[in-house]
Structure formats: structure tokens, C-alpha cells
Length: 113
Image (tube, rainbow, N blue to C red; front, top):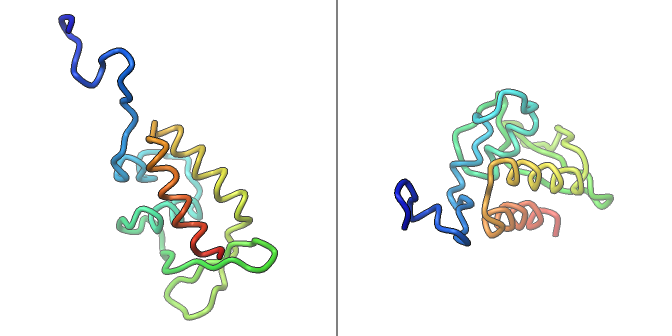
């Protein structure tokens, strides 16, 4: 190993993060409140928005709805495709390992089944 080279920076070694905490939306200043709420829910971290997402559901036409403290799914989040694209883009921005990204997306898809 060369001087100044760490174990994580060896040529060919994957240094992408596997830590879900590295994807917290608090790392960015320009995230929308809906995206922050979605990511906090996906990551099981303390909510950054009020109200916070308590659960999600998907309609037959693949539209995401969220519920907060009320018992109804009154908050429109957009389409499943949009949510997946945004989560993938955020994970890529945060240099997330593909396995971590897929785990988050599978949590989303579980509610679409």
C-alpha cells in the first residue's frame, strides 16, 4: 500500500456506502418536504417534516399515497416510477452501494403489492 493510501482506497475496492444513515435527507439543503418525509420513512430515521409519514399505499394505477397521524391516506406523493427514480438518484448522489439501494426500493415495492 502506498503512503497516504487507506484500505478503503485500494484500487478495485468498492467504497460505496452500505450505511443507510448516509442517505439521510438532512445531508442536502434542496430536498422537497415530500422527498424528505419519504426518505425518513424508508430509512426509519427521526422525521424531518411535520407531519411525518406513518405508512404508504399504492392505488391500482400506481399512485403513491401517504398517511400521517390521521387514519386516512390523504397525501398524494406521486407515481411509483417517480418515487423509484428519485430514490435511485438520491442513492447514487450519496454513493450508496447497489444492495442498499435495492433494499430501500424493495421496501417501497412491498407496499405496491
